[in-house]
Image (cartoon, rainbow, N blue to C red; front, side, top):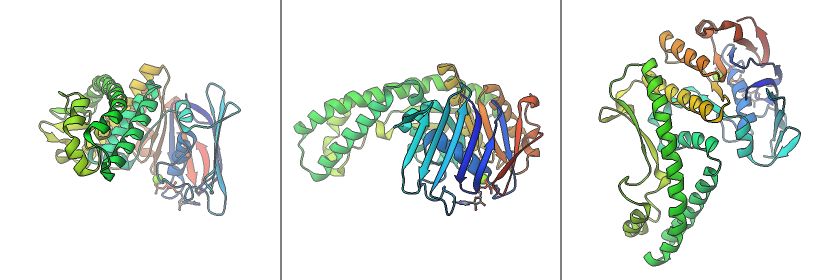
Length: 360
Ligand SMILES: Nc1ncnc2c1ncn2[C@@H]1O[C@H](COP(=O)(O)OP(=O)(O)OP(=O)(O)O)[C@@H](O)[C@H]1O
Ligand SMILES: [Mg+2]
């Protein structure tokens, strides 16, 4: 659901900002340090109660203040607001009522972010790719979070017992019944999601870039040919020695390969960034198909490491997706002409934390 009114108070150098975004494309431009990323960060706060730049709240709250507030109105007319205090307190409101879970908030404002760090989705740790898969599953399968939380809780307990060496093979079997049940459910959801995403990803990659034999496949965290129960049982001695459960949905990954090599060993940084954009756009399109509503893209500094040709193609795919897009640029000219329907594009100029709407 697009945001049609946004108010930010006390986020980094944004003292007090009010904007009326376009339901489609919003360009946020300004020089280095003006506050562009802070606007995306504020929207991220509104949707997830945290920043994508810092896990702590203190650095985000304006120096000298004790809280930051972001308030928005969605195009269904409902207000949504979040306040974070330096002491960690969190207040979330939607449609006049207090919400007590960030997961509920996340459902209202489905955000997909692309920043210069996002290309680590190809080169970084598997946990980033698990987060990517789980974002998609979470929004479609409302029971997923429960199964995933259960899995993690049981794994933690199992690992504690393994580490202390206080459990025998037969005793662990009792823990494993519940672990297997939850883990298999998590795997099923993830696997279904990836199967659906694959087609869209392939179509988008084909539009964006010509890389022969580019493939992505899902690894569920244990041998595809075996049941999780068999894997846990046959690995018990090894897990006992290690002091933790070596295989399971906590090791799931998305393997991106070119021919028989890992994409990260073959592709340039720019090419990796294009692959990441393709994954994220495919995710946005699938969200739209499955939930019949658009998501919101937060895109920071798309221009870095991408040439004009790729920038234009990515912008046009974003525009065609029907999603609401907030995209930053130091030089607005780099992306102002990348859109087909310029009448829907709004441009905001940021200077020392003040924001003014301009003609694109
Ligand atoms: N807690 C804070 N309180 C006040 N100002 C802050 C705080 N944290 C950061 N800043 C300042 O906020 C400004 C905005 O930073 P931001 O990262 O949003 O800029 P930007 O426009 O994205 O810059 P760039 O083009 O370099 O990415 C910076 O000048 C920074 O020094
Ligand atoms: Mg920035």
